[in-house]
Length: 275
Image (cartoon, rainbow, N blue to C red; front, top):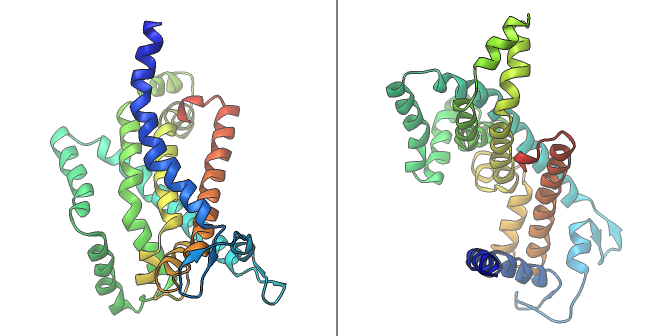
């Protein structure tokens, strides 16, 4: 009984925190998605599914299917996905490079990686306009990719670096003794040990990149709207909070679906410790 009480005492505060600051706000947003927008830009009764119909492309006014939102969602997914792949291509070897340095140089490189966070995010994104404009790259899709890769690269490098620091390099020696080539030794002995950090870095990069609207709005010149821009516009200029709430849950659903697929794959491959 005493053990149960200790467990509940430990679990209780965290559970209350999650309910009050995570579950309850999500339920409020979900409730808003079924309300009706009034003539004065507010929301109220009656309850309706029209907002969700609009999310999935059905225009009740003209009674036709208009897949604009789904196209924007797809664009958001592949922009976030490609930005994440760029972070992987740049950040994975960078994490190894930092790990192989001396302690003093290692701390300096990590500091340089974190220093940009000391500056306001908007200022850093606007700085890219000054860099790209002379080359005729602003505004453009390329500028969006560069800005998103720059913004989220540290979120990928840090967890991968943490995994690299824990690599057991004796396994590489064992693989080499068994006749493995350097590439084969890395693939079978090193890569699996860095997989937890790699997966964590991908999640920490892809999720915020999927919902971003600042980078695409500034560096893309608002020419290629992402789903984050749609949500921001509904809660801002349009003032349609009900429709914006439905779009928010659509975005949340895509993120949860991706995490669920990852969890399933991790479980099938015996990587439950990554979930």
